[in-house]
Image (cartoon, rainbow, N blue to C red; front, side, top):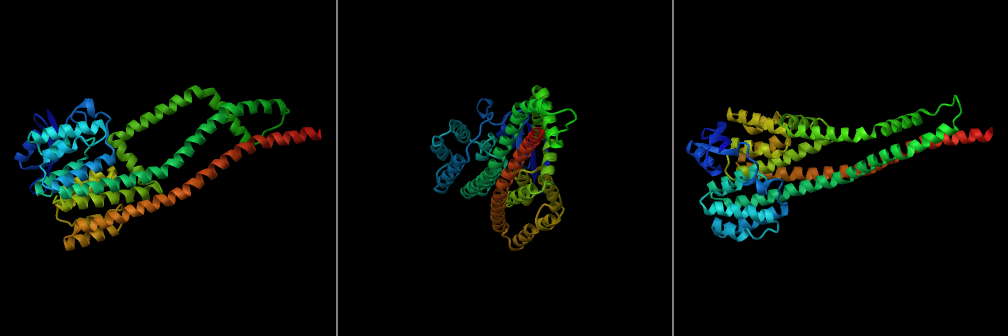
Length: 407
């Protein structure tokens, strides 16, 4: 098989390319013999996971992952061998897919594979950050501590995702209801009202402009209803597909960083992820360049990831990371300042944990504040829309009724 790899040399420089090997573990071993420290090793053209029959579209719940990691960490701390610990835990998850994953990992470890290599075969379950931290823990003899950090990291990430989804749920429901109601009115009610206006209006009478606009929209929706929905679906499909491409994803992330309010949330989430992931990697003994390469992929924003790649290059040239980040517009001043303190005291990991805690709290407060504003704002907008439609319909009817009564 052919594998695409990204690795670091002993002098701190990076290397990338392709390599032929029988399997993933053999590819990693071959790179190690060349003096390279693998960061990313992926099979070219292969589907994620060990086998496509079980990996396609499969995910593992965060709660199951956290429980597994914490239990595994406890067993490693107690001196239980890796293979035995995995064999004991593989029956614990309630999800059949996760049981299958752990069973395959147990077989690999019993066959002599490194734990990180076994995890790496399931990128849809174990992220690149997870695998590299486990690899660092194996090499440094602190696997139990690394697993504890990973469990905490998974819990923090899950909590943040839950807050974001919770804040977005209500506005999305209101938006969907509004769209459905709008098309219902345009297709079901307005055509009937248009007939009434046609019957009661006299020659030369002109309807108010807002009424004419609504009637025009209704006529357009009625005439092209069979085309509007398919076109909308195709456009959404094409946009979503483009966003999944490297270029599309980068442009979408750049757009998000220029959007008011959303920009603020995205930056705070990215800083929290950077600080917690980078601190965990530094505590595991991973070098700064390797840690930056791994952390960039865990942030979730391609623009900031590209900026971290540039930062790694400047660090490689001899600059302090705190100096480089101080020049970055997406990193608030507190981050490089705290990082500088960590670099001076040798406690970068501890300092960055404090930064991560601070920004995770900031994200929670910001999201709660936005949720309290968005909910009444959506209700007001919905009420205003209903009011405009009602005024556009009832106003002319009332005016014509009065005119007829006076006649």
